[in-house]
Length: 246
Ligand code: NDP
Image (cartoon, rainbow, N blue to C red; front, side, top):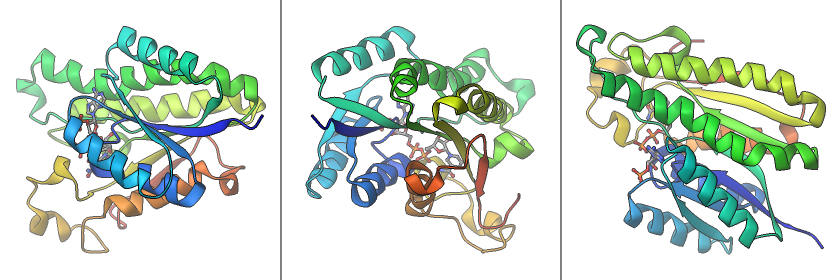
């Protein structure tokens, strides 16, 4: 029996994650397992959009930073869906909480690392064994330009994304033999709620393409990395930043 193929996208209810859900559904007919933390209304809206493409979209609400919640929700889904596999994992959920390091509270430091770095650990742990057994799978981690070059005012965010970049490279070396690839996508400024308060006019001047990117442009890259066409790429960090830095 052919199993139903799913892509698990964390933080799929808005912004870049939403665009990724739609791209994977459209481009690869992958069913979508859409994780979100709290915004039920947005998650339901994305679910309806994916379903309008005649693709299954199931919502899985959990906080990626919460180890027991992640493991319980994913295990339960797997046990209720034995006719399905998670072929693609996109670790996209992330938050920022900017401020100068000297004034940075422990809560601000921890929450940003817990979401990006611990989130990567919890969710990847929950799906990796099945991919290794199947000798097939794609893991794509959403990082950031800040994780490559560092960014003043974002020491917590830069540390979190830098750590996920290093984890991407290390894990790719561990599991390459099993034909599971692991790559990272590093966007610059993308038009989402995360950058809604930024002074776009000021930053645009620094970007060779002279504009912020759109979530769909990042999703196109993720869609390529999720496909068979990226079969010989692993352990890479791919920049998508309008020429701002590479
Ligand atoms: P948004 O703030 O627009 O959306 C964030 C998404 O992540 C939402 O779906 C949110 O769920 C979810 N989320 C946040 N925390 C958790 C959590 N603890 N558990 C589960 N889900 C969570 O962000 P973007 O789309 O802009 O960012 C997506 C990714 O891209 C992030 O990793 C970000 O760091 C990265 N990135 C973004 C850039 C940009 O310019 N926008 C640049 C570089 C990297 P809910 O709706 O329920 O709140």
